[in-house]
Every structure is written in structure tokens, then in C-alpha cells.
Image (tube, rainbow, N blue to C red; front, top):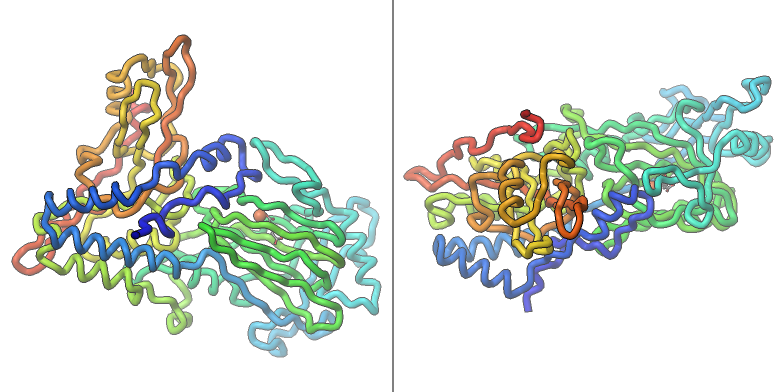
Length: 500
Ligand SMILES: O=C(O)CCC(=O)C(=O)O
Ligand SMILES: [Fe+2]
């Protein structure tokens, strides 16, 4: 039996909702409930054969299989180790060993302003033959209990997270993830772009210094709250201080990557790091002994050109089997000969109903689909898809919207009967292209609140329609000399609710 859903369907089970606001949490908790069954899949392909031809149906079936296999090879996290020079070593760059880290210093503002500056500086790797541990104790005394976001508030609860933290406004460090090659590695692995596509680079912004102390320091499974629509991930750098336990586990769609950075005083000191996409659940297991010091960074995708010297070791998305599938499909005269529409639900979660959501933030296979079809003369655009059967009046809604940002409509949208809902959706703005005219390549993923409105039952109550994020692909017709170029079928739209 085919397993259509493998890898491409959103898996809600592994997703923690704890470190999100309650609204975000409910959005995640209810997502992924509209998956495609085998029957639906076969019906869809039979319809494709009828609408286009057998070849188109076969191409799409093969494409979906490749998509599912490719999905497996996309990583959601990466990490590495960097040897650390002893803290007494010279920090002269000429003497540093390539990508070995110079001694790391942390200087901080003490709570007691009369503490001498020399007491507010920690050098790492830690040296137990000096008073380094005393200095570490002083640092921790100046740190604050580490909170986490819950229901839109910062909460401290040791059952959930036991650690101390310091904000970057209160400390500085000479450590830079750019200098030791971490940022370049992340760019290549987590944010690759096709050769011809818009280039983007990673900006790492220092977020916190944390200490998890043994025994019992830990951080329960959670998903980081993105600080902006451009944030695509998080980076954790573990500084060279001996500790046992405190493994970091990162999970995405049923897969797990574990990073065990425990070390003893006698081992060669090293810095360790891990970076992962924002929609990955992760957890820091209990630190059994010692101190686990981490610097955390928010990772943003920003336009830019990668260092050309890295071209040799770049991952080349054009070599992906998925890319060759797209090429052979588009190059065949029997595939959608008159042109048509394809739809791909993004497989990662994005804050797609925020004001600034844009394509530079696309991750993994989502970016390959976006850039791959675009490179082959197709028109592509991102669109919100509202699909719901659970609406009060039993009306099935399948609408392709034009406008992403969340609409909170509290005074203009009295929805009492189905025709009100139709008008409301029209007013929001839906694409001229019908949902059923699109060949959908996969099942819906993450959904976000899209439209809130007042509905009347016995009394008025606020209701919400959710949307999925999809890439719509306009496949141009096949002409005498190959695939024609799609005339840009998409234009940017204004928020219809702001026009008045
Ligand atoms: O320290 C770590 O390994 C991860 C910490 C973490 O998940 C966070 O700060 O959000
Ligand atoms: Fe986290």
C-alpha cells in the first residue's frame, strides 16, 4: 500500500506548544488534521488524467514520490565542534590554528557596581588550577533566573526550565560565530539557494548567555518563538566548561538529532554548536554535574552574497534528484501541454500571516520547489489557502486567498448565513483560479489564524478561519520550441480591509 503522507504531511505529535503564546499554541495544536488519504490521492490522480492526460498523471505521481524521498534528505539541524585554545594562550591571530577558537572571554556588568572590572571577566576554557570557578560563581550570582514564554508572558518554572540567563545588554564576549566558520556552515546547510535564485545569507544575533548547572539544570521540550518573520532558526554555542549530561535533542517531523557536549576536565577543551530551524522542537536534558554554559543566537535570513571562497564546498541544490524531476517534467510536451496550475503546501511552519512574511525565509524543500519551478519559466507565488469543513453552517470552504496578513474583523463582518461567508471571503480577496483547478502535490501543513470575524448563532461570538501557506505554480503551455515563459500571473494585493 502506498503511504502518501510520509514525510510531507505535518506531524503534530512531536510539536511542543509550551514556549509559545497560547494563541500560537492552539494554532499548532489543531494543525495537520486535514490529511490526504490513499483514496483521495488516487481520485486526485484519476481526475488529473481526465483533465490533462495519462502522462501528466504519471509525471505527477513520480514527482510526488521523488518529493517524499527528497524530503528525507533535507536536514533540519546541523552542528560541529571547534577546538578551543587554552585561556593562557596567545590570542594573536597568527598563532591561532585555522578554525580553532581563541580563548573566549566574557565580561559583564556586576550587580554590585563597586566590584572591580578584573573580577567581572571570565576566560574560557575554564582552568580549575586558578580561581576561575570562583569567577564563574560570581557571574552566575549576577545572572537572572531563565524564564520562557507562555501565554504571551515570561514565566519562571523550574519544572520546565532550570537555568540562569543574562541579556547581551549586560555582557560582552570576544567570541564570534562568524570568525570560526559557524555562520558559513549554517548558510550552506540550512539556507542553500539555487545558483540562479535570490541569494541570502545568515545573520546571527546574540540573544542570551545561559548557564545550566548540575545537578538538575534542564530545559523541557519547546519551540523557540521567532523574534521576526526573517528569523529562520536558532544557534546554540556551548562554551568549554566541564559538565556531564545536558544533551540537546532537536526534533522535526518524527526525526531526532542529538548533540551530546558533555566533557570532563581532562579532555581537550572544545566549543560545540548546533543550529536548527525555528519550527523544530528541542530539549536540554538534565545536566548531571558541572556547568553547561551556552551562548544562544537568533538566526535571520537576509539578502546577500555568500563568500565566493566557499563556492567549492557549497551544496548544490541543482544536483538534487528533485530538481532533475522538475526539469524532465517541464521539458516534456505531454506534461500539462496547455499549461495548468500546481500547488505545494510549504512543509515548514512560517509565521505566514505576519506583516513581513516573504520568500527569503523559505527553508529546505520549500525553497527548492520555489526556485526550481521559477528557474524553468513557471510563475510562482505564495498564497494563503483557507480550507475548512467545520464551519457552523456546514459549508465547505476551499479558498485561495491573495493577502497574507491576519485580518481581525470585529465590526464589519456579521456572518449569519452561508452567503455572508461567501461575501466575506470575496471581500478578503480570493484568487480567480479555483481551488479544484490546482493539482495539489502534497497535504496541508502548518496553519495560522487568518481571518477572525463575528458569527451569529444564539449569540454573537468571535470565530476564526485558519490558512495554510502554499506555493502556487503557473505551468506555462508547451510551445514549438519547448515550454513557454509564464506571463506573470500574480500581482501584489493590498489589504482589502484597509481600503476604506
Ligand atoms: O542551551 C541549549 O542547548 C538550548 C537552549 C534553548 O533551547 C533556548 O535557549 O531556547
Ligand atoms: Fe530553545
